[in-house]
Length: 183
Length: 305
Image 1: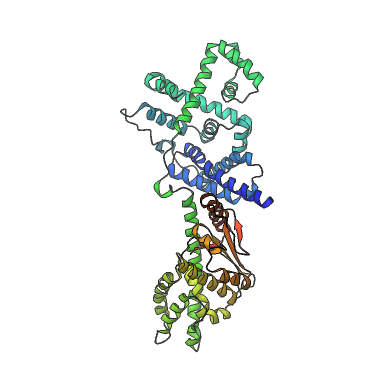
Image 2: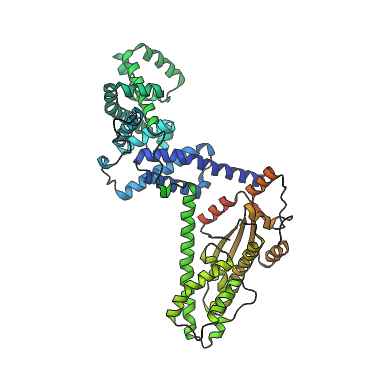
């Protein structure tokens, strides 16, 4: 029965990793706004996760564990490249949305641009909380920073986004209506 | 204003993110509802939360070259392993092929092994046809055609398998001269997923050739044959055409393992109602593909037959 349990757990772990792939990619993209780099980071994350799967004792902690690996891969990448990318040179795919396109695409472009302009630490915190629904404690573990830092980064990130996004939306009521429809 | 001071930005963020205790949250909720400014702040924070969700609901797809999902990682890994194996094999063969320069009788090198796979015969006959011992340049030119000649006979998808299987017969005397570390470890995973009798027979030839080669050169190797899909028929008691041969191989080589995919066994039971009985000594693994991935991660060479 132990052997059977082992195989069952192994299968479940494989399936869970596959399911996590899309979520990891979404967060990785939100961090770097580069589809190819995000995909590479996810590949590296999953590869490391598979290699070190024995380290995961509690399957319930799998999500936080995976995102911790992703955060390490992301940090290592920028350590290697010494963060040479100029934020103004990052191309956000929806940034240059023509006026003729839908207001939804316009919002998406605006929000992605706003997040891309946040400092890296704030960007990571706000996306982990808003996209993945992690608790502050989990984010603190994933990014290996104190919980107070998580709260202050989140607060600063949202204040900055508020400044960047909300005035424009108030000027353009069409966008605001779209948000209401989305909710 | 007092309430705004009492509720810091951090607190309001925690309120929106549901990070405060239920009792405190309900108390704050009442006060926030009463205060228009606080209410507006909370609404804005919730709106930002929704905006972030919306912005990344459909991130752009990864570039085409990397968009094939988890298989692309496996393919890259497989390619890497195959390339490394091919490079190592090239170095070994290159070293061995130079040695006949100092040998007195080239016939020693070209002696065919009657029990070796047919690929060996191809190599030997090709070399025997040479009127004299080939020069280094000729060998270098001939090496590529030899590999291509091996592939169709051995029916391997990757060159290293064919060349490895071909190696023992013609190179055995030379191999014996080489210093092979006693603790050398070679691990090969052979993947069988076909049910064609001819192909399976040739695959068994190749497996036996590989095992014989390692035995001849006294290399501590392990060969694991993973069968899944249609390849499972090779190790089923009711369908295997080679039960006797498999059992003989298992008796002769204790470094050979046959492993059957449990997923395939389950699928046969589920979809066709077949209760699979495996040949004696055949083990089961949770998933053939997972096993291949695991072994590749552990540095095993992977050959698909």
